Amino acid sequence: MIRLVKLRVIFLTVLLPVALWAETGDDLLRTGWEHFRLAEFDLAVKTFERGTAQAGTNSLGQAEALYGLAMTWALRRPGENADKAIELYRRAIAVAPRSPAAAWSLLAMARLQDAAAALQDVPDTAAVRRAYQDVIDRFPTEPAGEEAFLFQQAATLAVPQATTARPAVAAVEDFLKTHSQSPYRRAAWKLVAHGYQILGDHDQQLAALLQVLHTEEADPHTPIDHAGPYWSIATLAEFDCGNFAVAREFYQKLIAEHPTDQRVFLAKRELQHMAEVEARLRQ
Image (spheres, rainbow, N blue to C red):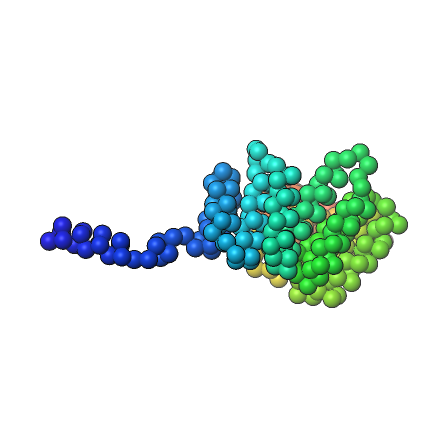
């Protein structure tokens, strides 16, 4: 009986269409990205290459597989190959110019250009800005376009000059007004805080850091540990803004929520110091 059952299984297997046993394009993409996540780069390359071949005339599937392959060559360690990655990004854009894979490929090329410029003695920031602007212009409503805008402003703020920081801060603040639901609000507020630090406007820097914290707390995926932000806000409020009320609030939050943090001792000392200062002022 067992032998007959086995023969029946083999017989049915032979009759089933080959397509039912083959990996689908989605399977290959999922497997490729899993290999990428686990740093199994050789396997990722082979899997994405199979995905590219299997996609055939499916331009969207081919673009997605090419993007995965390009990311692997760009970020694998060791053995990265930026030139090969750029060639693959361009192919992804060419086969499906309006696809999400094309948007992310264009952004990835701008990021590679940005990274290369950062290694130069005199970075060509204008060229980097143009590369990001190309993504913004071609994909203004896509997440890749939003990321490109923020990377563009971050590249500007990397050079701490008031003349360039002021328009960058204004641009990011406009972005926050027009993209109130953007998943990149936290990153945008961090840029605003950094910009105001460059400009020496500590009150606005403090307001931006409070917005960063508010955005973090509204995000259920944010890690719970806020000890660092609490400390940064409290010390900025105390020493640069003279805002003892905010400083006291966040020193106390640090002590209450992170009692084992190494800065708790210093937070208690600063609370005592502020109390002594206020007592002298009342005399």
